[in-house]
Length: 120
Image (cartoon, rainbow, N blue to C red; front, side):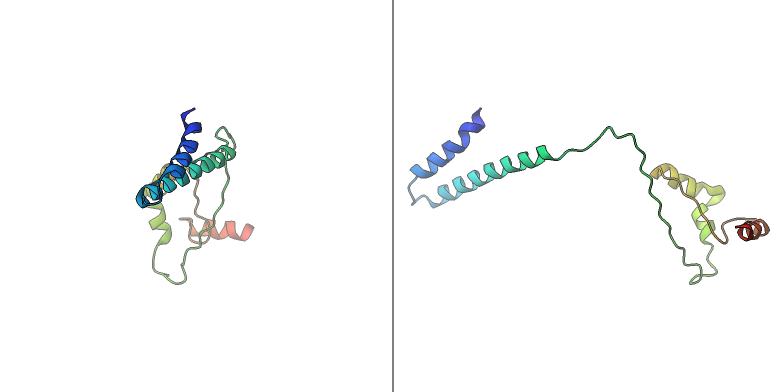
């Protein structure tokens, strides 16, 4: 209720004020502009909405290429997995994402890795 009266009061006060009060005129103009812009923001906020009750899981897949050819002596798989896979497990728990290491050098048993790769 008071907000409806506020803008007309500001306008009336600005009209009744003498032009010699430069700072008061500037302050009133700023207050009017601030009040009008806050009304526009409220209207914009009312139009936007967000569905909070969405039960759908979002599936995102990202493939990260490891620079094995540039650094042939570095054990990327070992660094990513960590001792007993704890680094990867910790990352999965913190982010809530499922991660897997695929490709050449991702398995301990080289013979089984070659066999699986040939079968595909």
